[in-house]
Image 1 (tube, helix red, strand yellow):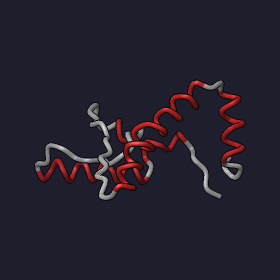
Image 2 (tube, rainbow, N blue to C red):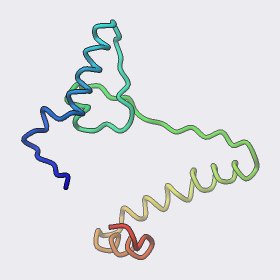
Image 3 (cartoon, rainbow, N blue to C red):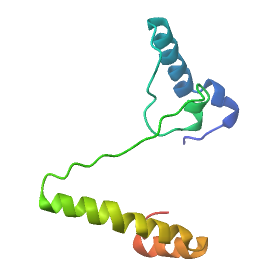
Image 4 (cartoon, helix red, strand yellow):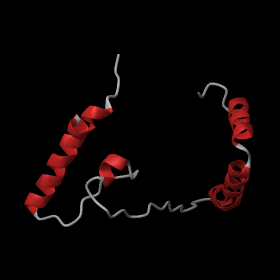
Length: 103
């Protein structure tokens, strides 16, 4: 059974590997390394700089344009704002109703 012991976080395989990648980039003279998304805490131990992440959508059909404008541009952001303004307990109940198999 796998488990996580925070006492060994400083010498975890992922952290050691990332350190070696950074060392190799430094040795090669790279000034920037992309750690990919998301900005996890272990990545931020190596830097104090992070770039914002953006999504771009190019609609190639009328259906795609409607999806982009209506769902991505209006309905989804509005739904998220409303959802996150709800009390935590009510949000939990909604999630259980909508996604019953998610813990």
